[in-house]
Image 1 (cartoon, chains in turn green, blue):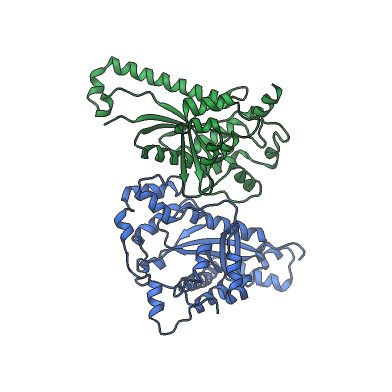
Image 2: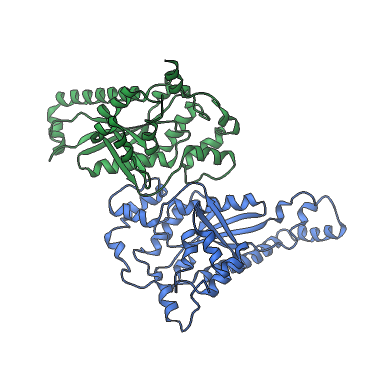
Length: 263
Length: 290
């Protein structure tokens, strides 16, 4: 049996707040990669963007991380990583990928080290562990709208996109009715690396955008069953989303756009 | 009174009938959306939501035992403070028309109302008498307590997705007189997606059009398409259903291995109970559009 390539899925975004849909993206991606028979998803990482991203209505990273943590309490494979949110300035997605890849490598090497130190222990394990261990791959997980943003002028650096799809890889969840494959064909860069772009079709429409959640909350409408109960309780307890919080960063340029126009 | 009296809002109980095979987050959302809608009108107060899983005699393909379906619905509503599960319909040995389930719950509320006032009367007889006296004396201080002198019985409205409304048009599935009584005496709350043909469907039916004031159309602002059929399909294929059904339901399904290729074959080739019943009746008025 050929051993499967271990994969870590990384999702970057505001998570303002984390919705059931965010978590569905992970589940769908994992199912898809497992079905290829070539991959074994070993971990999912949710990485909320830092406050300096400057997006309208973005509440403090402290809250966003706490909500994501609550939302993922019941998951045995997805976790929140606050590293990106703790950076003083906004971090390009490619740098977040590099950081987590280095972290994964380090974990892998330390495991290797212990394995070599106690070879007998591991050889008594299951057949998989006898094989040459494979270095995990890190892939960026995104929704269909994410691919679209590659076309937004000034939002992305060409070399970043190249590194993301070339070196790491993309898992893109698309909704019925939208066709990201066309978007890939239209781009020379994306079509060159399309072997590294996994398109996953979502059959069960479940579009819960965080923006819709926030506006419902401001209007006093129920968001139950769209986001976990624990997150609803947290929002109420800390009064996270208000008309005022929604005005935060209003009129501001997104940090990536600001940096680009300054150059 | 110039100020709106909150006590004078019409009380509403929402009843959802269906297979709930299994219950999904979408079913639970229907209740939340309907409640928000009624409260926003300022005229209604939703006091309760009832989930009534259909009995096994419905003979729908892939329908697993009511016992499991009721348990899952109960687990799913554990964290809700207003939606509950009622197993009366599912305990009947024969399939029951939805109208009869509506009537049953209406009756139950009627009698509960009587029992409640009887129960209330025991410990607070004095207060009750006092209230009457106060009424005569036109005591202004206690005025607020006076308004629900004759407390009206809550209305039981049938809660459904647009698919159910459209099923009114399926030959033999519904009796015309049943549809009439549902929309005339009880009322419908239909959650529909933006761009849906529900309005057109109502327009094209004389009965529905006549009672359109008793048909509440609630537009769903977040597309949610978590049908039970799709959940079962995902389960058969070993795909994740996490975050589409409550976690307790997912655990229950996994623990009891509820859905498989075999369970999906249950009732295969059988005629749906309503179709069998209505087709065998000598002359049932069927067509919705005359």
